[in-house]
Length: 323
Image (cartoon, rainbow, N blue to C red; front, side, top):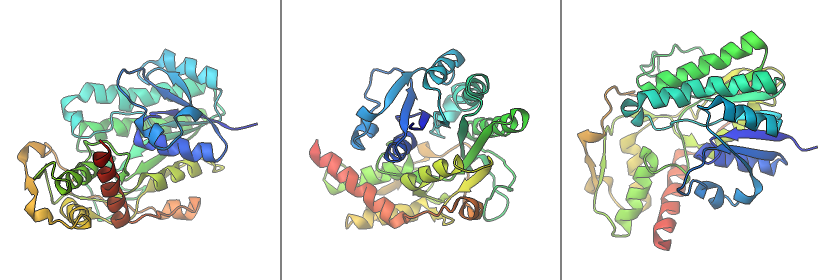
């Protein structure tokens, strides 16, 4: 009998790549998503898997809809990838961010506890929980100091996962994922904003690209590599929490340089700093240490930032040329 996976946030970047991975491994995938009028399925369509997924409709902020979906699915594994995922928006919508990224996690865990207690659970935690960092590299023992409503809400989601593991014996694990990108990234995220901007400038559709803090440094990896770590966590005998990262930090400025040079352009000719995109409280630098994941899961990132950014520029060029 095939394993069944229940994936919240199935239409997002991570949900799409994870669903493809699971389908390739022979899983039946039930994707949990709100009903919305606009085309939210484009990522699943790009990966050619939209028809292979069984959809259940509801919202993680509505416990009754989560419970109905879990009861129908009877999952072996549950991956909670639903969330308000854009950090900048969390200052404008702090209550909504808390409802989805904090209370939503508790709802999914409670549904599992009551209906499918033997199911294994994955929570999408984030490096933004570290925030105001102490020390050059962050691992599972690094203290948390979130610097945004997004990070604060995600920290609740992380700790409620630990609490349900310790209180009720659930096989519940969290992946503290550092920034992970792909051609399926939303246009509002800085990497995709840059690669889309490069493609538009290359094709004569734009002349400049406005960005916020060019000196912010992040540890960027490829989302398709990172979803494999999610799956590996739920294959372990014991649940645990793992940092998932490349261990390499790069500034926004240098990331821009990679993208523009791939299109034979100079970022200095086109990138313009814009204070509108500065955050009220900045996370200056993040650099992960995923030695524990390498040791326990056998996981290593496979895709360099150079290859990732080039892949994203090429994908945006193709998209724009086809329109």
